[in-house]
Structures are given as C-alpha cells and as structure tokens.
Image (cartoon, rainbow, N blue to C red; front, side, top):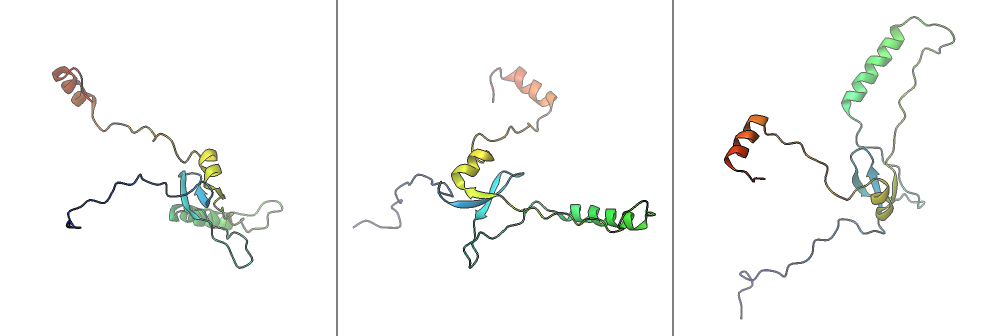
Length: 130
C-alpha cells in the first residue's frame, strides 16, 4: 500500500472558467467577464449595471447639478438636469463575447519600470540579456 499523502494527484489541464455555451455578462471597458447570466422568475435575464461606475463620477455629477441650479435660467430650460443613464452589461454566449470584446488573446504590452541609465549599464556588461 502506498501512502496517499505522498502521492501527487494526476495533473489535469487547466480548464477555462466558462464554456463556450455559457451565457455571461461582460464589462466592455475592462474586457472581463463579470459573471454568469441570472434569470428572473419569468425566465428573462436580469439586467446587471456596469461595475465601472465609481464615486468619482457621482461626485462630478453632484457638482454639475449644483452649478446648473445656481446658474440663471435662460430660454426654455426646465431647471432640472437629466439624471445620468444607467448602463448595463451586455450579455451573450461566452464564445460570441470573447470574439466581440476580445476577452482572450495576448496580454497587453506592459511598459518597463527600468530607467535608461540602468538598461545601458546592463547592456554594456552583458551583451544579451532579457
């Protein structure tokens, strides 16, 4: 008999988080999947607001509202500004969303944090380096 604590489990290939047929919500700006689609009792998908709304935008909106109320009214203005429209996550199958919003693929280019002086010193010491 072998000791089960010393044996390593067989290596399984890493599976994607979602199957191609799964219905998912997507954040288009961040290019990430927010989660699987949830349905209400009638069988319709529940709308999910975009998670990118921050308190910074709400603060600037509050300032804009205050400025419009303080400003003298001209013309046929109603005096009340429009409330910002709530934006919702688009949803669809994972396969279509990854093609439309380019969810998978090569990672974006990352800028180096090294300065030119550091790089030149290393280049003079080592002709081939990463």
